Every structure is written in structure tokens, then in C-alpha cells.
Image (tube, rainbow, N blue to C red; front, side, top):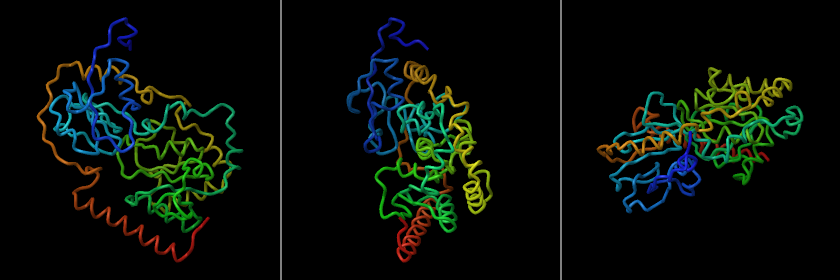
Length: 339
């Protein structure tokens, strides 16, 4: 791909508005913004300023006010709504959809996928010997029945250090997540919900801390990462069977070191999907196609709404998870804090 600047042509101007991003997010550092700036002379303007295009996310309804071209981007497990946007950037696999481009969620959380390349000379055996604890769990959202079940299965048999607000047993939330993960041989890395392609920083944080992830959430995670570098919950019929395997792997130093030594990336190299090759061209094609914005049907959407058969089922799942959390906290308070 040759950019306008490389070809000696003046980059076309593009007035971009951004709305409804999560608190603390910086649109100027997002992968799609970097791609836009390689093909356009981007001017970021307020939503009211007759922007050429609006990029919006899941955290608000400001985008309701924009009637022109709209691109929705999401770091959540959410499906595109063609009545609210013309194009979509999500972490999900949606083959055959010409109005969608996949940006894996974890790429929003790391400076470069090159950080996941295993350096030459990595000594997995020495790394394993340096681990002080068995397993970590850093979660603040109690809504996750699968990961709650695994935590309880492992905690009952060996002990898991929980450093988030949920199931906390180390005296309070930890300040340095990476240092906390790095002290443990394993890390429970379960997503909030499940979808093909939906892999978050939960997994890459564990890889960067050089611990072995126990992973659930993206059934096709092996398309991005080497499954030999993690323990996949999908390989086991129950939380108890998964816990049995983790405990057996912990006892087998040779097998554990082999898992830790495996590069997170297939071939220990960043592939084109993680380089986001083609994103520049896709965005340029979308925004210069002359497409007429679609008819809007604005509505407030519940996060992860498609993961449940109904709003009532989602509410029940949330209440059940919160009740599990409160009951565990009560029992833990009676039993003391593990340091």
C-alpha cells in the first residue's frame, strides 16, 4: 500500500468527529486513527461541526445527533447495528462482511504487537523457578459464571491469589497488575463473555508478565496465538477437569517449562492480521466510496446484549454472579485473608 504522501500527492482533508468513548480513552492513539492519518489530512472537530465522518463507540448516545457518515468502533463483545452505523470496527470475526474490519481488542491495550515476540535466549526454566506463587486472578467484574467456577475449583484445592476487587483475598486491590501476575505460575484469564475473535488484554497481560494463561472467551483464539503457550478451557468438559489439569501441569516441571517457553505468537512472529494490514485501504475505500448514510434507528444498547437470549436472562446472570461474589466474600471474611 502506498500512501498519498509517499506518492507525492496531497492527502485529502478529512474532518473527523469522535464520540461516546470510554472514560480515559485517547482517540488519537487508537489504531484506526493512526491508519486514517496515513491516508488523510485529519482534522478532529466537535460532533456539531459538520464532520465528514463520525467515529463512535459504546459509552453514550452523542452519536444520535450525527446524521452523516458513521463508523462504529467497539472494544466490547458487541455486534454491529447497521441502523446506527454505516461501517464497523470490532474485535469479532465476521467473514464476508464488506462493511466490517477486525481490530483485535488487545491491540488497543499494547503499544505494539511486537511486545509479544519471545526474545531469543529466553530461559523458561529460570523464569519458572522465579515464580513465588501458584496462580493469580485479577478481576473486578463479578459477572462471569465460568471464571467464578474455575476460581472456586482451584481456590478450594490449592489457593489462588486474587488481586482485583472481585474475590479479593490479598488485603485489597493490587496497584501493579503486571508485577502481581509475574509472581505466579498461572493466571486465570477468562473474558466476561464469549465470541469468536473477542480476545482482550486479559490474555496479553498474562503473556507480557511471562506467566501461563488459563484462557476462555474466544473459541478461535488459536487464529491469533499459539495454543501451546496457554491452557485452553475449551479442551476440558468442566471446571473441575480443567482444575485437575492445571494442578497436574504445575507438578510437572518439564511440561510447565515447555508451556512457558512457547511463544505466544505462532512462529514467534507478528502476522498480517495483528499488523492490521489493509486497514488503511479499507478506511480509505469506505470514506471515499460516496456511500449515502443509511436510515437511522437510534436506540440505547445493553453491553454484550447478544450474548443472552433476553434482557431478563442477562439481568438474571448479573444477579446470580453478584450473589456468588457476596456469598464468597462473607465466607472469606470469616476465614481470614491470605497474604
